[in-house]
Image 1 (tube, helix red, strand yellow):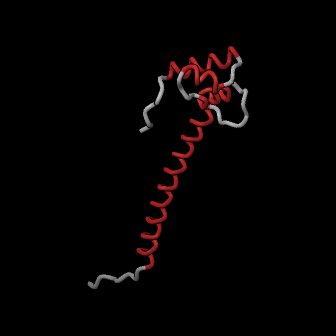
Image 2 (spheres, one colour):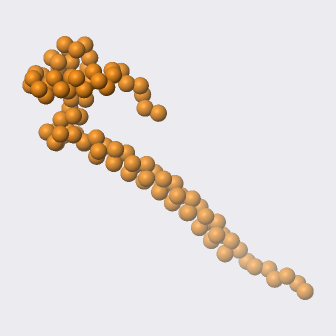
Image 3 (cartoon, rainbow, N blue to C red):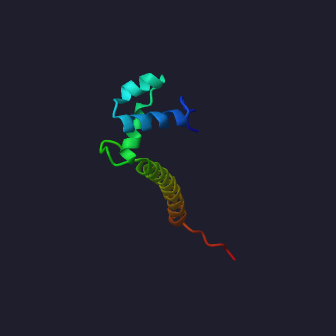
Length: 100
């Protein structure tokens, strides 16, 4: 479960809009609003294609989904390895024929 947000989304969106429209530094806008939403501004810039040093929100979500998928596949692989080892033991066991 994600941590609760420190500031409402609307306040951070306002900071993003103000930085983008006025061109003022992020730190000045954040100080005026009494918040710290620099990461939100940087993320909005990345989503708009203005920054290359961050993943976009879509890329971040895709990465998160792919990591979950990899973890699930690794768990399935471990289960299959354990099952194949069990079956291999069963095949290697000497067979005794029932007497009539």
